[in-house]
Amino acid sequence: MTLTTTLSTLYRKPTAKQSTAEIQCESQAAEIALLRGRLNAISRSQAVIEFELDGTIITANDNFLNAVGYTLDEIQGRHHRIFVDPAEAALPSYANFWRDLGAGQFDSGEYRRITKNGDEIWILASYNPVYDDNGKPVRVVKFAADITARKNQSADWQRQVVEAISKSQAVIEFLPDGTILTANPNFLSAVGYGIEEIRGKHHRLFCDSAYTDSDEYRDFWKRLASGLYQSGQYQRFGKGGRSIWIQASYNPIVGPNGNVIKVIKYASDITAQIETNQQAAAVGQTVASSVTEMVSTIEEIAKNVSRTATLAHEAKSMAESTGKEVQGLDQASRRIGEVVSVIQELADQTNLLALNATIEAARAGESGRSFAVVASEVKELANATAKATENIEISVREIQQSIAIVVTSTEQITGSVSEVSSNTNTVAAAIEEQSATMAGLGRTAEELQALTISA
Image (cartoon, rainbow, N blue to C red):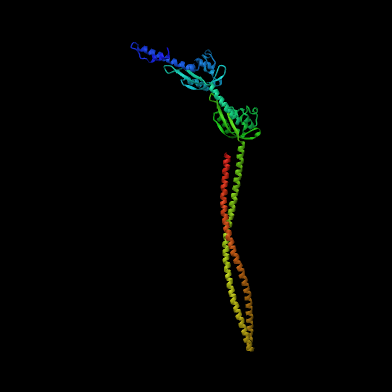
Protein backbone atom coordinates (compact mmCIF):
# COMPACT_ATOMS: atom_id res chain seq x y z
CA MET A 1 0.00 0.00 0.00
CA THR A 2 1.45 3.37 -1.02
CA LEU A 3 1.35 6.52 1.13
CA THR A 4 -1.20 8.04 -1.29
CA THR A 5 -3.43 4.97 -1.02
CA THR A 6 -3.08 5.08 2.77
CA LEU A 7 -4.10 8.72 2.93
CA SER A 8 -7.07 8.06 0.62
CA THR A 9 -8.16 5.23 2.86
CA LEU A 10 -7.71 7.35 5.98
CA TYR A 11 -9.77 10.28 4.77
CA ARG A 12 -12.38 8.71 2.37
CA LYS A 13 -16.04 8.74 3.25
CA PRO A 14 -17.55 5.40 4.41
CA THR A 15 -19.96 3.50 2.10
CA ALA A 16 -23.35 2.42 3.22
CA LYS A 17 -22.36 -1.26 3.21
CA GLN A 18 -19.37 -0.79 5.65
CA SER A 19 -19.87 -1.32 9.37
CA THR A 20 -18.45 1.06 11.96
CA ALA A 21 -15.90 -1.55 13.07
CA GLU A 22 -14.68 -2.03 9.51
CA ILE A 23 -14.31 1.69 9.09
CA GLN A 24 -12.35 2.02 12.38
CA CYS A 25 -10.13 -0.91 11.44
CA GLU A 26 -9.29 0.58 8.07
CA SER A 27 -8.67 3.97 9.67
CA GLN A 28 -6.28 2.53 12.25
CA ALA A 29 -4.46 0.52 9.61
CA ALA A 30 -4.08 3.62 7.49
CA GLU A 31 -2.83 5.63 10.48
CA ILE A 32 -0.28 2.93 11.32
CA ALA A 33 0.88 2.85 7.73
CA LEU A 34 1.23 6.64 7.78
CA LEU A 35 3.31 6.56 10.94
CA ARG A 36 5.45 3.79 9.49
CA GLY A 37 5.99 5.87 6.40
CA ARG A 38 7.08 8.82 8.51
CA LEU A 39 9.53 6.65 10.45
CA ASN A 40 10.94 5.27 7.22
CA ALA A 41 11.43 8.80 5.92
CA ILE A 42 13.23 9.82 9.12
CA SER A 43 15.28 6.60 9.12
CA ARG A 44 16.57 7.30 5.62
CA SER A 45 18.10 10.65 6.70
CA GLN A 46 18.76 10.11 10.41
CA ALA A 47 20.67 7.67 12.56
CA VAL A 48 18.05 5.92 14.69
CA ILE A 49 18.52 3.64 17.68
CA GLU A 50 16.02 2.29 20.22
CA PHE A 51 16.70 1.53 23.90
CA GLU A 52 14.99 0.00 26.86
CA LEU A 53 14.31 2.51 29.61
CA ASP A 54 17.53 1.47 31.36
CA GLY A 55 19.69 2.13 28.27
CA THR A 56 19.85 -1.42 26.89
CA ILE A 57 20.01 -1.40 23.08
CA ILE A 58 17.00 -2.89 21.24
CA THR A 59 17.76 -2.05 17.62
CA ALA A 60 19.42 0.51 15.35
CA ASN A 61 19.21 1.46 11.69
CA ASP A 62 22.00 1.31 9.13
CA ASN A 63 22.77 5.02 9.42
CA PHE A 64 23.54 4.62 13.08
CA LEU A 65 25.51 1.40 12.62
CA ASN A 66 27.60 2.98 9.87
CA ALA A 67 28.34 5.98 12.07
CA VAL A 68 29.62 3.90 15.02
CA GLY A 69 31.18 1.07 13.00
CA TYR A 70 29.27 -1.76 14.70
CA THR A 71 26.89 -4.39 13.37
CA LEU A 72 23.48 -4.79 14.94
CA ASP A 73 24.47 -8.13 16.46
CA GLU A 74 27.48 -6.51 18.15
CA ILE A 75 25.38 -3.95 20.01
CA GLN A 76 21.96 -5.54 20.50
CA GLY A 77 21.34 -6.26 24.18
CA ARG A 78 24.31 -4.19 25.32
CA HIS A 79 24.14 -0.87 27.16
CA HIS A 80 24.40 2.57 25.64
CA ARG A 81 27.64 3.16 27.57
CA ILE A 82 29.62 1.31 24.88
CA PHE A 83 29.37 4.55 22.87
CA VAL A 84 30.54 6.75 25.76
CA ASP A 85 33.99 7.57 27.13
CA PRO A 86 34.49 5.36 30.23
CA ALA A 87 35.36 8.40 32.36
CA GLU A 88 32.07 10.04 31.41
CA ALA A 89 30.08 6.82 31.89
CA ALA A 90 31.39 6.57 35.45
CA LEU A 91 30.05 10.00 36.41
CA PRO A 92 26.84 10.48 38.42
CA SER A 93 25.60 12.80 35.66
CA TYR A 94 25.51 9.86 33.22
CA ALA A 95 23.43 7.75 35.61
CA ASN A 96 21.11 10.72 36.10
CA PHE A 97 20.83 11.07 32.31
CA TRP A 98 19.27 7.57 31.98
CA ARG A 99 17.25 7.93 35.13
CA ASP A 100 15.54 11.03 33.69
CA LEU A 101 14.95 9.33 30.31
CA GLY A 102 13.45 6.31 32.09
CA ALA A 103 11.10 8.69 33.89
CA GLY A 104 9.88 9.99 30.54
CA GLN A 105 11.94 13.19 30.26
CA PHE A 106 13.10 14.30 26.81
CA ASP A 107 16.77 15.22 26.23
CA SER A 108 18.60 16.77 23.27
CA GLY A 109 21.89 18.42 22.40
CA GLU A 110 25.36 17.81 21.00
CA TYR A 111 27.05 14.69 22.33
CA ARG A 112 30.54 13.26 22.07
CA ARG A 113 30.50 9.53 21.36
CA ILE A 114 33.10 6.78 20.75
CA THR A 115 33.07 4.43 17.73
CA LYS A 116 34.03 0.75 17.65
CA ASN A 117 37.64 1.54 16.74
CA GLY A 118 37.91 4.24 19.44
CA ASP A 119 37.48 7.28 17.22
CA GLU A 120 35.65 10.31 18.50
CA ILE A 121 32.45 11.39 16.77
CA TRP A 122 30.00 14.17 17.53
CA ILE A 123 26.25 13.86 17.06
CA LEU A 124 23.32 16.25 17.22
CA ALA A 125 20.67 14.05 18.81
CA SER A 126 17.37 13.87 20.63
CA TYR A 127 16.39 11.13 23.09
CA ASN A 128 12.62 10.65 22.91
CA PRO A 129 10.67 8.56 25.45
CA VAL A 130 7.89 6.45 23.80
CA TYR A 131 4.65 5.98 25.77
CA ASP A 132 2.05 3.17 25.75
CA ASP A 133 -1.72 3.69 25.64
CA ASN A 134 -1.71 4.39 29.36
CA GLY A 135 0.85 7.19 29.04
CA LYS A 136 3.62 5.14 30.59
CA PRO A 137 7.14 5.33 29.03
CA VAL A 138 8.13 1.95 27.55
CA ARG A 139 11.27 2.70 25.52
CA VAL A 140 13.53 5.48 24.24
CA VAL A 141 14.10 6.32 20.58
CA LYS A 142 17.12 8.38 19.64
CA PHE A 143 17.33 10.36 16.39
CA ALA A 144 20.80 11.61 15.55
CA ALA A 145 22.82 13.37 12.85
CA ASP A 146 26.59 13.04 12.54
CA ILE A 147 28.11 16.53 13.00
CA THR A 148 31.72 15.38 13.39
CA ALA A 149 32.87 17.19 10.25
CA ARG A 150 31.28 20.43 11.42
CA LYS A 151 32.77 20.02 14.87
CA ASN A 152 36.21 19.30 13.43
CA GLN A 153 35.94 22.34 11.21
CA SER A 154 34.95 24.44 14.20
CA ALA A 155 37.75 22.89 16.25
CA ASP A 156 40.20 23.62 13.43
CA TRP A 157 39.04 27.23 13.32
CA GLN A 158 39.34 27.48 17.08
CA ARG A 159 42.80 25.92 16.86
CA GLN A 160 43.82 28.57 14.35
CA VAL A 161 42.50 31.28 16.63
CA VAL A 162 44.43 29.79 19.55
CA GLU A 163 47.58 29.59 17.44
CA ALA A 164 47.16 33.23 16.40
CA ILE A 165 46.71 34.24 20.03
CA SER A 166 49.68 32.10 21.04
CA LYS A 167 51.94 34.03 18.66
CA SER A 168 51.29 37.31 20.45
CA GLN A 169 50.37 36.14 23.96
CA ALA A 170 52.06 34.19 26.71
CA VAL A 171 49.97 31.02 27.13
CA ILE A 172 50.09 28.38 29.85
CA GLU A 173 47.72 25.51 30.66
CA PHE A 174 46.90 24.08 34.09
CA LEU A 175 44.86 21.30 35.59
CA PRO A 176 41.93 22.62 37.65
CA ASP A 177 44.07 22.30 40.81
CA GLY A 178 46.82 24.55 39.38
CA THR A 179 49.26 21.87 38.20
CA ILE A 180 51.13 23.04 35.10
CA LEU A 181 50.47 21.05 31.89
CA THR A 182 52.30 23.05 29.22
CA ALA A 183 53.31 26.57 28.18
CA ASN A 184 54.21 28.30 24.94
CA PRO A 185 57.60 29.91 24.15
CA ASN A 186 56.30 33.42 24.91
CA PHE A 187 55.43 32.41 28.46
CA LEU A 188 58.68 30.53 28.98
CA SER A 189 60.65 33.54 27.73
CA ALA A 190 58.79 35.85 30.12
CA VAL A 191 59.48 33.72 33.22
CA GLY A 192 62.93 32.46 32.17
CA TYR A 193 62.15 28.75 32.68
CA GLY A 194 62.35 25.79 30.34
CA ILE A 195 59.22 23.67 29.87
CA GLU A 196 60.71 20.71 31.72
CA GLU A 197 61.47 22.94 34.70
CA ILE A 198 57.81 23.81 35.22
CA ARG A 199 55.73 20.92 33.81
CA GLY A 200 54.02 19.02 36.63
CA LYS A 201 54.74 21.76 39.18
CA HIS A 202 52.14 24.03 40.73
CA HIS A 203 51.29 27.57 39.68
CA ARG A 204 52.59 28.79 43.08
CA LEU A 205 56.07 28.50 41.54
CA PHE A 206 55.44 31.96 40.04
CA CYS A 207 54.02 33.60 43.19
CA ASP A 208 55.23 35.08 46.44
CA SER A 209 54.99 32.63 49.35
CA ALA A 210 53.00 35.11 51.45
CA TYR A 211 50.37 35.19 48.70
CA THR A 212 50.26 31.43 48.09
CA ASP A 213 49.71 30.83 51.83
CA SER A 214 46.70 33.15 51.88
CA ASP A 215 42.98 32.36 51.66
CA GLU A 216 42.82 34.70 48.67
CA TYR A 217 45.10 32.40 46.66
CA ARG A 218 43.23 29.26 47.66
CA ASP A 219 39.92 30.91 46.73
CA PHE A 220 41.44 31.97 43.40
CA TRP A 221 41.95 28.34 42.34
CA LYS A 222 38.67 27.21 43.86
CA ARG A 223 36.81 29.71 41.69
CA LEU A 224 38.70 28.58 38.59
CA ALA A 225 37.99 24.91 39.37
CA SER A 226 34.29 25.76 39.66
CA GLY A 227 34.34 27.36 36.20
CA LEU A 228 34.59 31.04 37.14
CA TYR A 229 36.69 33.18 34.80
CA GLN A 230 39.39 35.38 36.40
CA SER A 231 41.26 38.35 34.92
CA GLY A 232 43.30 41.35 35.99
CA GLN A 233 46.82 42.60 36.60
CA TYR A 234 49.01 40.22 38.58
CA GLN A 235 52.51 40.32 40.01
CA ARG A 236 54.41 37.12 39.33
CA PHE A 237 58.03 36.03 39.79
CA GLY A 238 60.26 34.47 37.16
CA LYS A 239 63.30 32.31 37.56
CA GLY A 240 65.70 33.78 40.12
CA GLY A 241 62.93 35.80 41.80
CA ARG A 242 62.68 38.44 39.08
CA SER A 243 59.46 40.45 39.47
CA ILE A 244 57.08 40.36 36.49
CA TRP A 245 53.76 42.13 36.00
CA ILE A 246 51.21 40.61 33.63
CA GLN A 247 47.77 41.46 32.29
CA ALA A 248 46.16 38.03 32.23
CA SER A 249 42.95 36.06 31.93
CA TYR A 250 42.44 32.59 33.43
CA ASN A 251 39.89 30.68 31.35
CA PRO A 252 38.32 27.44 32.67
CA ILE A 253 37.73 24.86 29.91
CA VAL A 254 34.64 22.71 30.44
CA GLY A 255 34.53 19.12 29.17
CA PRO A 256 31.55 17.28 27.66
CA ASN A 257 30.43 16.24 31.12
CA GLY A 258 30.15 19.85 32.25
CA ASN A 259 33.18 19.71 34.52
CA VAL A 260 36.28 21.89 34.27
CA ILE A 261 39.07 19.82 32.69
CA LYS A 262 41.78 22.50 32.44
CA VAL A 263 42.50 26.20 32.82
CA ILE A 264 44.16 28.18 30.04
CA LYS A 265 45.85 31.44 30.90
CA TYR A 266 46.52 34.15 28.31
CA ALA A 267 48.91 36.88 29.45
CA SER A 268 50.80 39.97 28.27
CA ASP A 269 53.98 41.19 29.95
CA ILE A 270 53.26 44.72 31.25
CA THR A 271 56.29 44.97 33.54
CA ALA A 272 57.70 48.03 31.74
CA GLN A 273 54.33 49.79 31.91
CA ILE A 274 53.91 49.07 35.63
CA GLU A 275 57.47 50.20 36.40
CA THR A 276 56.85 53.41 34.45
CA ASN A 277 53.62 53.97 36.40
CA GLN A 278 55.43 53.31 39.67
CA GLN A 279 58.17 55.78 38.74
CA ALA A 280 55.55 58.34 37.76
CA ALA A 281 53.78 57.73 41.07
CA ALA A 282 57.06 58.21 42.93
CA VAL A 283 57.71 61.45 41.04
CA GLY A 284 54.16 62.54 41.77
CA GLN A 285 54.70 61.80 45.45
CA THR A 286 57.95 63.77 45.44
CA VAL A 287 56.29 66.69 43.66
CA ALA A 288 53.34 66.56 46.05
CA SER A 289 55.70 66.53 49.06
CA SER A 290 57.81 69.35 47.63
CA VAL A 291 54.75 71.43 46.86
CA THR A 292 53.40 70.78 50.35
CA GLU A 293 56.69 71.91 51.88
CA MET A 294 56.77 74.95 49.58
CA VAL A 295 53.21 75.84 50.51
CA SER A 296 54.15 75.56 54.18
CA THR A 297 57.21 77.78 53.61
CA ILE A 298 55.18 80.32 51.67
CA GLU A 299 52.56 80.37 54.40
CA GLU A 300 55.30 81.01 56.99
CA ILE A 301 56.76 83.79 54.82
CA ALA A 302 53.27 85.21 54.40
CA LYS A 303 52.88 85.25 58.18
CA ASN A 304 56.24 87.02 58.58
CA VAL A 305 55.39 89.52 55.85
CA SER A 306 52.04 90.09 57.50
CA ARG A 307 53.77 90.73 60.83
CA THR A 308 56.25 93.04 59.04
CA ALA A 309 53.37 94.89 57.45
CA THR A 310 51.81 95.33 60.86
CA LEU A 311 55.10 96.59 62.31
CA ALA A 312 55.59 98.88 59.32
CA HIS A 313 52.12 100.27 59.83
CA GLU A 314 52.88 100.81 63.52
CA ALA A 315 56.24 102.39 62.61
CA LYS A 316 54.45 104.66 60.17
CA SER A 317 52.04 105.70 62.90
CA MET A 318 54.93 106.28 65.33
CA ALA A 319 56.87 108.22 62.69
CA GLU A 320 53.85 110.39 62.01
CA SER A 321 53.40 110.90 65.76
CA THR A 322 57.11 111.69 66.16
CA GLY A 323 56.87 114.13 63.29
CA LYS A 324 54.06 115.90 65.03
CA GLU A 325 56.09 116.01 68.30
CA VAL A 326 59.13 117.34 66.46
CA GLN A 327 57.00 119.98 64.79
CA GLY A 328 55.71 120.94 68.25
CA LEU A 329 59.30 121.08 69.52
CA ASP A 330 60.24 123.31 66.57
CA GLN A 331 57.42 125.64 67.43
CA ALA A 332 58.49 125.63 71.11
CA SER A 333 62.09 126.42 70.14
CA ARG A 334 60.86 129.31 68.04
CA ARG A 335 58.92 130.61 71.06
CA ILE A 336 62.08 130.23 73.18
CA GLY A 337 63.91 132.28 70.55
CA GLU A 338 61.29 134.93 70.84
CA VAL A 339 61.68 134.95 74.67
CA VAL A 340 65.48 135.18 74.30
CA SER A 341 65.02 138.16 72.02
CA VAL A 342 62.88 139.84 74.68
CA ILE A 343 65.50 139.07 77.36
CA GLN A 344 68.21 140.46 75.07
CA GLU A 345 66.26 143.67 74.67
CA LEU A 346 65.76 143.86 78.44
CA ALA A 347 69.48 143.29 78.98
CA ASP A 348 70.33 146.02 76.51
CA GLN A 349 67.92 148.41 78.22
CA THR A 350 69.33 147.45 81.64
CA ASN A 351 72.87 148.04 80.40
CA LEU A 352 71.79 151.43 79.04
CA LEU A 353 70.15 152.30 82.35
CA ALA A 354 73.31 151.25 84.21
CA LEU A 355 75.41 153.45 81.95
CA ASN A 356 73.09 156.37 82.57
CA ALA A 357 73.21 155.69 86.32
CA THR A 358 77.01 155.67 86.24
CA ILE A 359 77.06 158.96 84.45
CA GLU A 360 74.62 160.45 86.98
CA ALA A 361 76.66 159.06 89.90
CA ALA A 362 79.80 160.68 88.52
CA ARG A 363 78.01 163.97 88.36
CA ALA A 364 76.78 163.60 91.92
CA GLY A 365 80.29 163.21 93.22
CA GLU A 366 80.94 161.69 96.58
CA SER A 367 77.26 161.35 97.32
CA GLY A 368 76.65 159.31 94.27
CA ARG A 369 79.55 156.87 94.82
CA SER A 370 77.42 154.12 96.38
CA PHE A 371 74.89 154.54 93.62
CA ALA A 372 77.76 154.21 91.13
CA VAL A 373 78.76 150.92 92.75
CA VAL A 374 75.22 149.61 92.34
CA ALA A 375 75.08 150.89 88.79
CA SER A 376 78.37 149.12 88.07
CA GLU A 377 77.05 145.85 89.45
CA VAL A 378 73.84 146.28 87.46
CA LYS A 379 75.93 146.88 84.35
CA GLU A 380 77.99 143.76 85.00
CA LEU A 381 74.76 141.79 85.53
CA ALA A 382 73.35 143.24 82.32
CA ASN A 383 76.50 142.32 80.43
CA ALA A 384 76.43 138.81 81.91
CA THR A 385 72.77 138.53 81.02
CA ALA A 386 73.49 139.72 77.50
CA LYS A 387 76.36 137.25 77.20
CA ALA A 388 74.16 134.37 78.51
CA THR A 389 71.33 135.44 76.27
CA GLU A 390 73.71 135.45 73.30
CA ASN A 391 74.82 131.91 74.19
CA ILE A 392 71.18 130.83 74.60
CA GLU A 393 70.37 132.38 71.24
CA ILE A 394 73.22 130.47 69.61
CA SER A 395 72.06 127.24 71.25
CA VAL A 396 68.45 127.86 70.25
CA ARG A 397 69.53 128.47 66.65
CA GLU A 398 71.50 125.24 66.70
CA ILE A 399 68.48 123.44 68.20
CA GLN A 400 66.25 124.95 65.54
CA GLN A 401 68.64 123.83 62.80
CA SER A 402 68.74 120.31 64.29
CA ILE A 403 64.98 120.28 64.63
CA ALA A 404 64.65 121.36 61.01
CA ILE A 405 66.89 118.46 59.97
CA VAL A 406 64.90 116.08 62.20
CA VAL A 407 61.64 117.35 60.72
CA THR A 408 62.93 116.75 57.19
CA SER A 409 64.27 113.31 58.13
CA THR A 410 61.05 112.41 59.91
CA GLU A 411 59.06 113.38 56.85
CA GLN A 412 61.35 111.26 54.70
CA ILE A 413 61.09 108.35 57.17
CA THR A 414 57.33 108.67 57.23
CA GLY A 415 57.25 108.56 53.43
CA SER A 416 59.62 105.57 53.33
CA VAL A 417 57.70 103.68 56.02
CA SER A 418 54.46 104.40 54.17
CA GLU A 419 55.99 103.04 50.96
CA VAL A 420 57.33 99.96 52.84
CA SER A 421 53.91 99.37 54.33
CA SER A 422 52.28 99.62 50.91
CA ASN A 423 54.89 97.33 49.32
CA THR A 424 54.58 94.85 52.18
CA ASN A 425 50.82 94.67 51.70
CA THR A 426 51.35 94.07 47.97
CA VAL A 427 53.89 91.32 48.69
CA ALA A 428 51.58 89.72 51.25
CA ALA A 429 48.74 89.65 48.72
CA ALA A 430 51.05 88.16 46.08
CA ILE A 431 52.28 85.51 48.51
CA GLU A 432 48.72 84.56 49.44
CA GLU A 433 47.90 84.19 45.74
CA GLN A 434 51.06 82.12 45.20
CA SER A 435 50.21 79.97 48.21
CA ALA A 436 46.77 79.24 46.75
CA THR A 437 48.37 78.40 43.39
CA MET A 438 50.89 76.04 45.01
CA ALA A 439 48.13 74.38 47.03
CA GLY A 440 46.29 73.77 43.75
CA LEU A 441 49.45 72.27 42.26
CA GLY A 442 49.78 70.04 45.30
CA ARG A 443 46.25 68.71 44.85
CA THR A 444 46.91 68.18 41.15
CA ALA A 445 50.09 66.24 41.93
CA GLU A 446 48.23 64.05 44.43
CA GLU A 447 45.45 63.39 41.90
CA LEU A 448 48.06 62.55 39.26
CA GLN A 449 49.74 60.18 41.69
CA ALA A 450 46.43 58.46 42.49
CA LEU A 451 45.61 58.10 38.79
CA THR A 452 49.09 56.68 38.10
CA ILE A 453 48.77 54.12 40.90
CA SER A 454 45.28 53.04 39.76
CA ALA A 455 46.49 52.68 36.20
